[in-house]
Amino acid sequence: MTIFSRKPTCPYCKNPLETTPKRKAKCPHCGQWIYVRKGEMLKEDDAQILDWLVFLDKYGITKQKIESSRNDLSKKFKAKASVHDTIWFILNSLVTTKPEQAFYEMARLANQEGKDAQSYIEQALRTQLNSYKLRGIKTVRVVGYAEEPDYSTCPDCVKLLCKKFPIDEALEKMPIPRSCTSGWCRCGYEPA
Image (cartoon, rainbow, N blue to C red; front, side, top):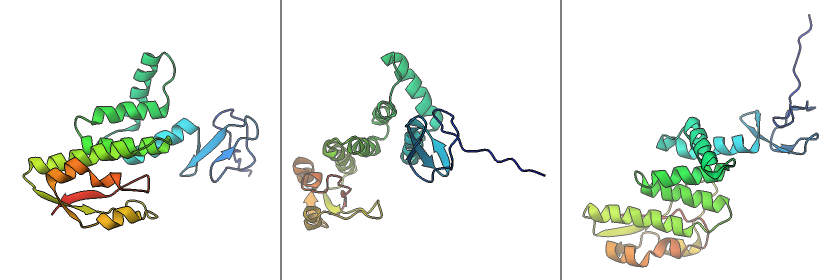
């Protein structure tokens, strides 16, 4: 009895590949980059959508929401909307319900695009501080975060860790992220 095994095929040109790539690789036939997520070969757009779902799932954003938003934008643009344009669109819609989180995700996207993320981080922190102020909190202190395993707090932010600020002074001066030299500040404030 012969067991047939199908050769892997390029997700773009559908030509057979000698082996299934273990990570990002170029198709030898069409030259397109093949992305690999959980052993599955994907086109770049599909990989980007899966990557963003990791961050957006906690806000109730599904693959279907991304696809329908992309279709809506594509109709508006009269051309296929990029994944990044679609994510910007979705994040802008989240600003009204989850502003702090939306601004942090905007910072992530800006950083991925090679743009300055600081203004988005500052807006997220301003939103956080205003929320504290509305709750009657008078003083906050700077805290560091280690979201990524290889994240390290920059030397300028280390000097601010645990430093206390009256909330109005923190809102006015915004010492973080302005002092951060890492380019991707994840420090924040907590009630003191």
